[in-house]
Image (cartoon, rainbow, N blue to C red; front, side, top):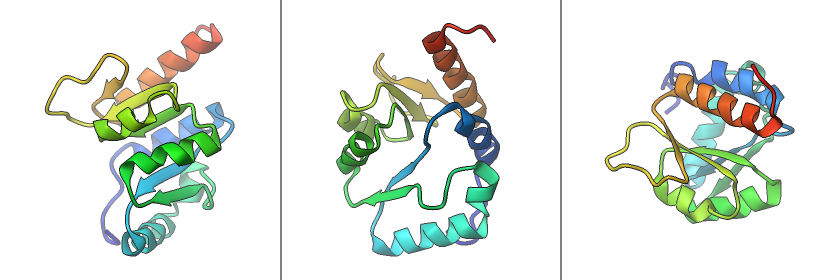
Length: 136
């Protein structure tokens, strides 16, 4: 992971979306070793400065369903994840679900599938504009 590049468009999209929300958090499922490596990777890629997400806005859990605990504590309204089972655990906790990346099966209607960061940005724009009633 330390030498892994950032996914194209990720930092730029996050940087653009951060001002639209009160707070933005990373919530990740991994063990202690990967937690350390994740923090190193974020620091090596200057993630906080490049995205506007504060360095301390990072939560870890050991099981995917436990992401719901963090989302409830933090009041998260929009959640991006590539695992449908995570979104299923977040139903009733998070209002807007974005299922990221290619999927083997058609996702349920309550989740918004997005293939990449550009599509995520567009879909979140649509949702935010619909919520506020503002035109673009």
